[in-house]
Image 1 (cartoon, one colour):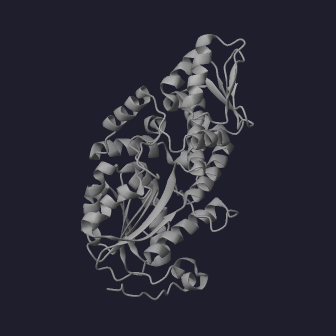
Image 2 (tube, rainbow, N blue to C red; image 1 turned 120 degrees about the vertical axis):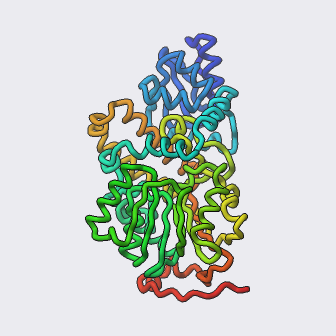
Length: 418
């Protein structure tokens, strides 16, 4: 990095250098109010982080993630240039590193201890995020209100079509058959449960602890004439009971907490036994590490995206076989690009609803998430699994991508080789 120090006080110069090291000497310019700056030496910067006061600079050296997020939200820090590009550059520079200060590590541990995903804790965590109001999410989600990663068979298709493609992809992976009983853990606003019932002829019990989402889902089911085939239940996944042909969870596992995976595994076994199958769709990471402390503090309390090997704690005690693993990381980056663009078109209304700081808070959350998937610090996994006595084991993967096969929905199954 090249540091311009002619008018920089010694303390500010020291703090700038320290901050530059903490963000992995990313190709980003950092400037202070007096015009002093630190810049990349051998490349053009991806953008500029403008820090408005020394207190903010000191806080960022002490706890970069939380201080950056809070300062941006409160307007004590600005980003000149494309926010996603700047954050992506920082995340890439930190790939494989853990430069957190002792204070930042302590703050992260404190969040883990105070945001436990107990029955009451999970309900409070979900309430803080998902019960902001359906009208808010309607501003920038697709018409089906799907708040999970979409699937883009080609990058040029729109968000509406991509979300429908995602729901169909999951249904094809599960090879749903008319008349089967499906349980969904964490159903959002209910679009996927209704899609399964309408297009694949199954009966669904869908669980969620967000009161507002369940109310919306029930109204939607009645409006579409599907209330007799889909039951929306306001309850925790730990209380699911009954026997089903398949278990599916789209976007819930990251809210469970790895300490609860064995309990979730018991629930799955209770639901599908040895002969059923299931699919988990979740945000993950390449290796175990805490999610951004700022995200957990301000946006998603209790969130804990796992590494793939941690997810095996769900399967191994019950001898479940993993049949297929797919990573849709780039699909989530594109999904978030769509969400962020729609959000920006609605900021006047969002500010009217929640205030200017909320606009900046959620802009940073959406942009940071897109950057995380772009840079590879976040992954999106779909894991298909089955019990040891499950007879629905595909011979090839043609059923996923052969258009004629998927249109007819008459895939021929082969019994697993013994």
